[in-house]
Image (tube, rainbow, N blue to C red; front, side, top):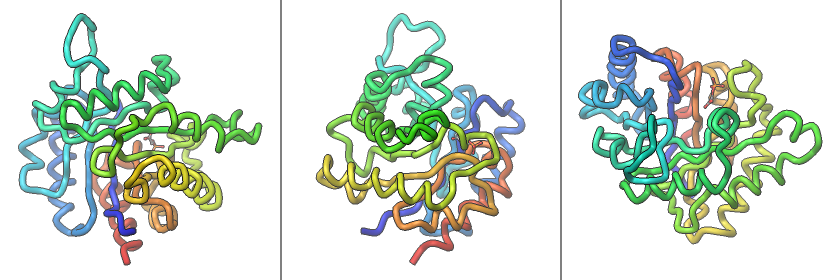
Length: 252
Ligand code: PGA
């Protein structure tokens, strides 16, 4: 099963207009040298409209970091999926561990957000991952399995869902999971997807958590890893593009 590698940049709450524009332009320019790889940047909700023209005609798609499950309504401060679609977003991250931890998001809410994304014509990048305490207790596969079961809509398809495995303890710590750890969890995720979805073998599963240019090709080169969700290293065009080149090295 050949799956096109996907490298997604999660800028988190970083980037004023000037930096966001410069970063988008540099990533778009560099993407011309990366045929065969899908690239997505997910700037903060203030920026998609501004950076969209910089991505026009490039291989880089626009994404967002979160959406509300409702298409509109009395939800102060939230952003709805149709609003993101209107700004030119093609993807939205849902269930990132920072939202699960800081905003109390649970699997049912994440699933509702993914469904809202689909209803608006967006693909959902659905994040799962265990905490260090859960890993130390030997619960990693159970936790990730439970999150996947609860967070993915039943009608998920390879064209509109990407799973991102991001161990919480690896995010922003400079301590990526080992290839053994990633290999074990991704193999388990792939089995679960194949069992549940008709085209489960075609769904892409990304690794995220301290991915950088030095470790990218080794991690993304693993059999069940189809790309990366990149935080800190996506804030510099050179490192984001170097990671994408690392993914290209795994193309056969
Ligand atoms: P990091 O973040 O690459 O900075 O570890 C990854 C993420 O949170 O998606």
